[in-house]
Length: 462
Image (tube, rainbow, N blue to C red; front, side, top):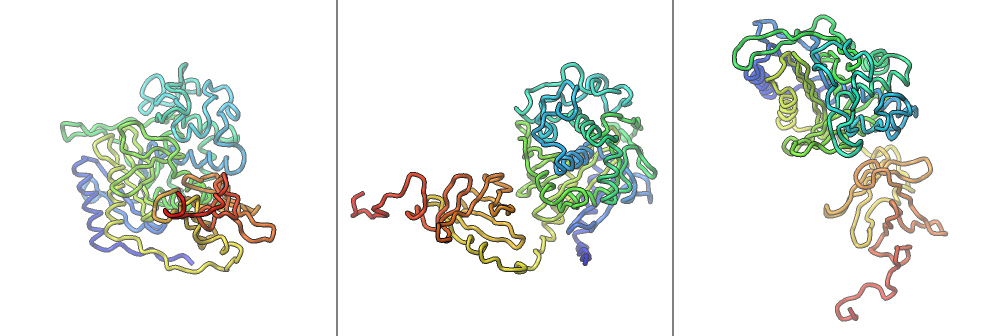
């Protein structure tokens, strides 16, 4: 049974409307439309316009720029989850002949491939894709600005390569694959590579005068996977809910969680926390936010979410610059999260009690450092230091009786419960570390052994 989303308080709705009204007025945007998602459903929508009594609604398309990259990343991760490629594979293995084949798929996803930020030739966002009919035209003769894997360097051509990779593996165009594998399953019927009415026109607003100039509308061709998509707040709200929860028809919850983990650090001097698999990560106050900004001539966009608060916001506007769409979206998240803190789900016991798993729970010691191992309702294990000092990790059960870390220091590491010949539990082996029930348990195979004289005080021969 689907629960009805809880309505926002009138004061919260008023605060959200005030924030977008100030943003539209100060940013001098011809129009702006926004939405807030909480609990997986849209709970607020708002719009402002320079045309009296003619504000857009959630079904009007705007160009979303680099939020397109997140859609492309989803397609690549589907290929990975199906076993058709690995993120450590060099691009050349699946898309030969590009001249940039040494870069790995994972490096391209997190902008650590070292490729140029832009294409050679005229400004690609404001020129037709017919000027770049082949990948060689997108990359140019010297595509690398840095050695692959050495640093974060945002690259639009890198996502063109990923779009071409998707097309090569699937044997269909990027747009065809996107529609069949993401847009249709998620019900994003108003997201497309080219505009579909009703859609907003793109405008440049003069920096020093209240006058406007229409921006050209170009088919970006091969660059589409990096930034060409058009969408609506209604569609992007559904997409934001997917990025929070996953959808097994597209990507499972574990994979979208993986997307939200930073893999490459930010550029020096920037306030963000890095880049994951098609998603930016940033800090806003004490809140970690994940999402993406977007801009193309005539349009700015922002989609940001807070997993801890289960809140996301989308902002779309039709101006080239002046309105900080990402900042506005994060402000909308903050307004809701602070005005109406998330009410946690009621605690419920696990469906059944597994005595073998219960035996693993409780305090353990790595040397003299105390840790607590908890069994969660979903069957995962959570290892956390007592006192807050140490390495925490969540672990997922495997079919062979072992556990694999999914985050933190022990991500990818294996935990094994080691038993004595009589079947009793001896210790835990986690990535070669020995966790015992008491500090330096002399009955466990502690590396280096334990002094047979045991623990002693000051009068016992230090």
